[in-house]
Length: 372
Image (tube, helix red, strand yellow):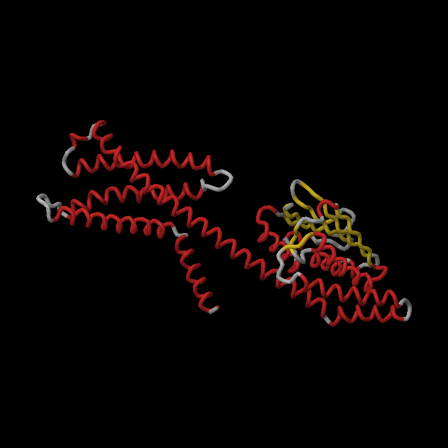
């Protein structure tokens, strides 16, 4: 079943890539309108075939094809209007009025052009007058308006389907990235070196401070539990994210002891804002691995506050920062690059992610998420 679904998605993707080519789109438009012209030409021909004045098929086709190919000429314009002036919930009244006006203008223009060509085909150019033009326009306007709105609404439906599919793809990517983050966190938790250092610290505390050792064992269990508790969750509140981070930091403080100082300053009003699950742990881990582990006096500062409708989160350390070669390459490392990709996929242009060297030495990782 999964293989069939993957094959269907591959076929859909290839078809979508094919439609991106301008020649393909134009060929499809003209091909569909040709089929419509042939259908109506056949109807007209069969209607008059058994009468007193049968119409030659070529003449019937010329009349119907003229109308269809006029629509083929303006179909790309209508598709562009549907895409660039989409009717949404917040603007439907204004956009609807705009499209009603545009549909009347385009349909009127096409009917007038078709009437002139039609009169030339039937060899009655003397009828090309304002009176006879209006006489042809008035009873046909409603049908031509229906054609405009059929094209427009069909394009609207396809556009919304495309947006829906993009949303599904984005959600799928986010689920994959979340699973990777959780796997990375679990890998770090069960990594022999990590567990060895943690258990060694607990063992050292047993003879000195059994209560502290008990708390550390509890904190390790809580840390592992919290990692799995929100499995599959895209977003959690900042309060929950900090709870997980504190569990991680408690363990790391035992490992580094006096070599590590951590501070967390969070504006209480942003604690309930949703952030990506497991977004802070890889950033803080990166700070400690590249900065604190190499220093005799490591410092990690985490701050979060509201800023211009978003929540700005900063993670600072006093390590070596980015070298000139890293800045020129825009190097972020795998962990930070994956973090940036998650933010972009989840929030699009409503997020930002930056690395800045501190004037006093060290690195600041800055990112913003929309305040929801």
